[in-house]
Length: 147
View 1 (tube, rainbow, N blue to C red):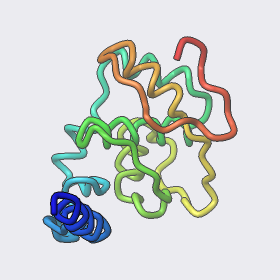
View 2 (cartoon, rainbow, N blue to C red):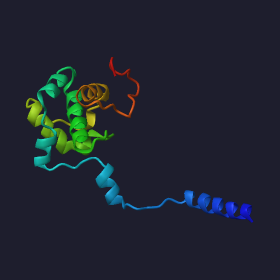
View 3 (cartoon, rainbow, N blue to C red):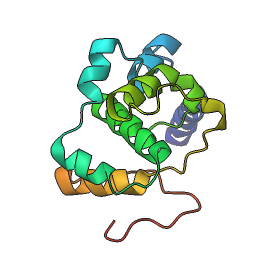
View 4 (cartoon, rainbow, N blue to C red):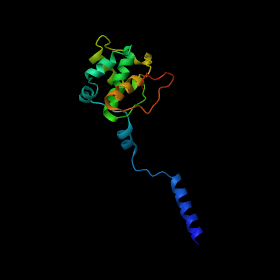
């Protein structure tokens, strides 16, 4: 009899593990894990750079990489997550960053911007300031020394 009870319990557990309990709706999941959609005031807050962040920014060569760095840093400040996105999806944020930090780039056609992900630089900054490392490895590029 004891063996029958154990088999029945295992079957119930096994069947229930194949079904997922859905607690959050799609909107709630997006609110927690999705890329932030900033208002103008939030852009001012999250894309503002401290002096150490500005110094690190100068280590990146191109305006594209610098812009992507500011985007990822701002999104990380807001959600503590890294995001994969197309620059056309975040055009308003990019235009704000270009206006704030690179005034000589007033309007840019983002469809031709291909950006090498500076996650290594971002991780180096975050490690130095908050002892945080990116859980996402760089693809196709070695990580910066000391990371």
